Image (cartoon, rainbow, N blue to C red):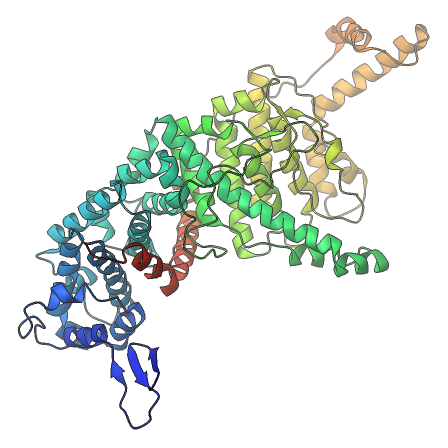
Length: 619
């Protein structure tokens, strides 16, 4: 008996004398691509179509193969197919719902492929028809909202989110996607929040939900009132905000884990042995080899949450133990394959187990610490475009945090001490600090460490001035808070305030360093005034090393004779503004994210296999 082989919608027999046979669903697609109404000769055509397993590849390919004029000839059939897909979403039989969702994905993507400036047709008109568009999209969004909020199949919910991501990302510039106007009018914001607030749903769909929300927030955000921005800014439900924080923390932690695994692999492998033999001249190349693909989508979600919602700031500091964090998921793991910039990372309700303690005691962590570790990795090398975007966005997020009063309160809280093991760029003149030597300090010290680390390790020819300015601004804002609230921070400032060395050496930076040194006139006046007094006090009293109390006594006794230059406005700064200064950056960033999300929504991510097993019988 000849064996049957399936390729691109064809059922081929091994016998060369037989013509290849097309599977029935492909024959039905071909009827839709005729100018006649396929239901004229077959009244049950649409009912039968949604019982057939969708051939995504064939349907999309067929749409893409037509030119604009050919597509316009079958517009009525395309409209009819779109409307019947929406009707099928209300069916009781899950197989019909699944097939309808997948057909919608193929339709939306396939038609958008033809949406070029020369095609001469409007997407909304081609898919739905102008006269029916408002009602069609209302029904579609209501059906998706119902499916996402129901206690039904998790796989079905996943496919709903995939359809929504498909709908949002079919254009590189999401603000040019006119269909999203209907997504603004018929909001699914509450459905997204429900997913994030419910642990089982969050484990399965949290990542997709967070990325979808971040993209919707960026639709025409500078041109009109975006309801998703308004709603996100006033969310105060603790479970929802915590759920969003857990999803973001898990994704960032997964990145940190991948980087650490690759780092350890290189350190213990052949390259490490070679480096030990020939020296560290290839250290920079080694660093580039252990780079891991960044995740701007989840970073954008963190930014929007921090920037728009003041209540989310509390989530940054909520602690959880880092030991024994692996939990068995209540529901099955996601079926979508994991990709570097994919839409479904490994499932876990808490931070990955690789965020291990630094000593035998239980070490606690939080979203901010995970974010600082992520930042310390991506900011090491900003030559790559994605890392540059990530590094810049990390600094923007830190800028927003440094301006927030509550955030500063927990950053400087002496009762909230952590060991934060930031990644440090391999350099020839310094050794990597041992983890066990890291002190427990307020989180503001880790933020300052990160800023100083960037400043001292990016002295390159193509000077990243924009990123340097942002680092200095973060430091400045933290210092302003310390001055305002009279916080004395125990921090080693020497690495940050070392411009003096450059001002005394002949070099291209001497003039600039001299200007900065001159601006530190008060600091130098204090040092020059009190140092001789302290040395004299020690000599007179025959004391080799003064205590803090004795130094304070000298300072008090000689304070009246200290002359300082009055500096105005040092504790003032211009607050962060996205729309006026960062709009171009975010437009480009969202375009890049949209492209990556669309690329990862390939045929296999919309596969039916698991769904067909789940709904193997139609009751």
